[in-house]
Amino acid sequence: MHARYKYFTSLMLMLFCFCQRGMAADRHILTAPYFLPGDAYFHTAISEKVLKQLSDDPDHPFEYGRINWQRQHAGYYSLSLGKQNRNLAKKIKAAYYSIRHNLVPLQLEVWGRSPNTVADHPLDRKTEFIEINRLSLFFVNENFDWKKNRFPLKYNEDWYKQLSNFGFPNGDYGALVRTPDAILESWRLSTSISPLSVELPEVPIIEKQAIKVPMVAKGRLKALMLIDTRYKKYYKRRDRQELFEITNEMITPYIAEEGAWKEI
Image (cartoon, rainbow, N blue to C red; front, side):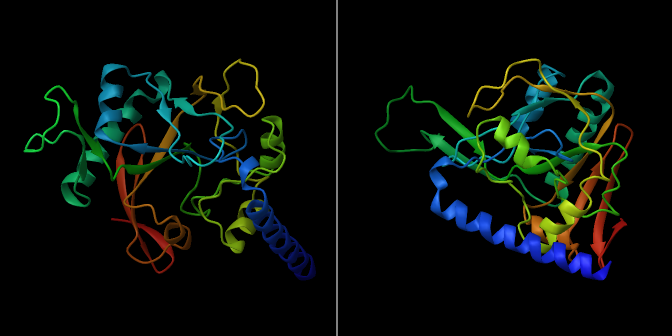
């Protein structure tokens, strides 16, 4: 067993290095994937604008949060929670404002004409306040044991096949934690961790185009709201990292201590 583990470790390291060289040599054809069937989570970013959209329409889909403007994109771009997760959406709003009031103050950037400007700009130029420190959120299956399994990992064994279906045979996995041990861990447990349970839209896959029609959650989900975007520290469970587990029933804060997640 030990020899087999060493063999697969070496194999994964070689594949990782090969993929890195391939990306450097051929970046113009690579993709930055959205959600791919088989992923254990759907990642998004929460802002007041998103919460307002949910208030106006409870079925308003969440947009995928990892976007690279220099890449083409593949996969599924948005997720609607469905009626069974109505309370989850409400709890996400409560968790957001709790974090804003106690941990991470809102930061805004003015786009367009400042309301206090003395510069010579057209009076009808629109002023926008853009939230620049949106909070990172991950939807996972309700029974996903994130305290036991490393997070945030995709645990998707078929990612290469899925990207090929979208016309990207040389695509990027899009991992948030790219260390060799994280890649190996994601592969090692990929067959034992269930993918996010979603119903895919019945639309054809067009080569080298992402699908914007929303997926819909099949069952009850829960969400993990992070305090910051230092994903490697969450994966390593570094001391003092904080997050909120959000279910349809409750909001529970956690903190990392001595390599484990502990309820606050």
